[in-house]
Image 1 (cartoon, rainbow, N blue to C red):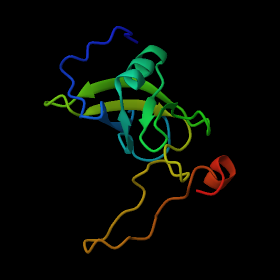
Image 2: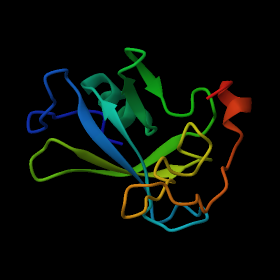
Image 3: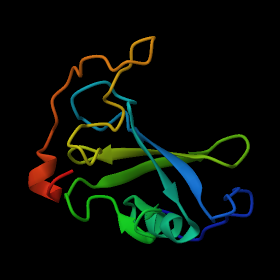
Image 4: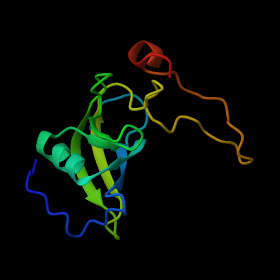
Amino acid sequence: METSLETGDLRFNADGLIPAIIQQAQDNGAPGPHGRVLMMAWINREALEKTLSTGFMHYWSRSRQKLWLKGESSGNRQEVVDWFKDCDGDTLLFTVRQQGGACHTGYESCFYQRLNRDGSPAEVEEEPLFDADAVYGKV
C-alpha cells in the first residue's frame, strides 16, 4: 500500500470528513453476492492515512469523536483491496476483504433491510453472521 498521501483533489466537508462506501471485493470468497455494498462510514485525513499505511480500514466515529479500526472490538476487520474517488472527489469507494460481518448488528452488510415500495420494511432474508449482543453488549 502507498503510504504517501496526496489529498489535494479530495473534497473533505467542513468537519474534515469524507464519506466512504465500503464494498465487498470480487475475490472476497464470502457467501452472498460479490460486490455487495457492506457499509458507509466517515473518514478524516488521519483515518485515511492509517487505512493506507496499514491496509485495514480505519474510520472517524462522529458519535465517539475518535479514530477507530474496523474490527477492533469484534475482530471483523476489513482488508483493503483497492480504493477509488468519485468524479467530484467528495466520496470514496473502498473494496475490501471482509472478515465476518460488517454491520454492528451482526449482519454481513449494514444494508440488510430491504424496503417495500411504500417504505415499510420487508422481511429480512438473511441471518446475522455473529451475535452482536455477545460481541458488543446490548445493541
